[in-house]
Amino acid sequence: MAIIEYDTRAAAAFVAGRHPQDEGLRAWRERIAHHLRPDARTRILDLGAGTGHWMSAFRRWYRLIPLGLDPSPAMRAAATERIEEGDAAHIPLPDGSVDAVWLSTVVHHIPDLRAAAAEIRRVLRPGGLVLIRSVFAGRPDGVSLFRYFPEAAAVLDARFPSAAEVAGSFGTSGFVALALEPVPQLTAPTMAAVLGSFDRAAHTPLVLIDDDAYARGLARLKAADQAAPVIDALDLLVLRARHENLRARHENLRAGLENLRAPR
Image (cartoon, rainbow, N blue to C red; front, top):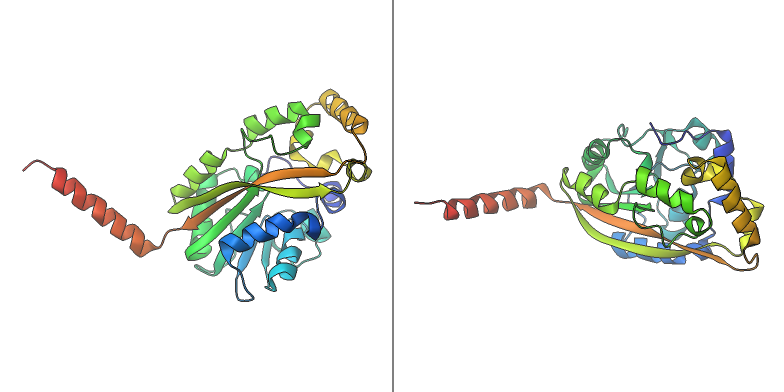
């Protein structure tokens, strides 16, 4: 069960206000390419694909054919890409069938991260990557939303996982963390553009604060410089699935070292 359920209003709000243009995502394009080295043959699964925004971006940027899954009928209905039903606990793909899994602002909706990690590990080829774009607990500073809605930062710490918690959960299925880095983006060219399409339903932390806190935050948004660009930085957490043979060699080496330490 997700933290919130995405209905038709939320899907429309995502389309209207949560999809930065390619120019604003230049750094994301570069960092994903740096870690993944994608080409037309790369099979990438967008898990929690929503309305397909990132799938479309991958298709344009890397000339590949992405796969997409989302549990929300409303999100799938609003999508511009073909997205199948599925979630992190039930991925309808064969073992070892994808090179990478992308999760954008979705990891906080996953109720059992260890089970999700095991299922993702099943569909990844050995050595495949998981790329998680998120705001993690304890790391709100890069996102302007929290400056206007400080109560939402408390929601972040209470309801969202930390990067360490995510990495630890994935570690139980043989993943190793390669990088955790903030990636800047131009969320909107002006604050006025944000307000023109702003909808509480598109932002999980805002849904979870009370109405008075939301009203105060909205007043702060309206009082801000409406001509200023909105620049945010979300985190990119990159994990790699260890090769099974390397994992076995590591276990054998550790066992050998323990035998050497044992008293004779």
